[in-house]
Image (cartoon, rainbow, N blue to C red; front, top):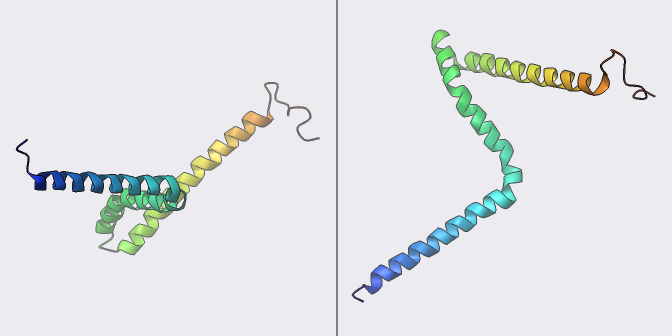
Length: 108
């Protein structure tokens, strides 16, 4: 019973502030995530590529633009080759049967 009224007000203020923060975070993930996720992915790629770009720039005598161009081109080529390979394997899996012939009726 010896609790101070001001301590109670501080706790209540902290509780309400926490509720507002939780509501804002929920709103961001529930409503705005659809619009924000491309930027989150781009930010993650930028963070992941920062060390290789800086390391290559040291080898290229501090030419950061050239290093960034090389690293981004290499990563893009790797991602595209993986996607093309997966697409090719999926196409083979869907269109060919075990005998080496096309599945009948697929092209008609």
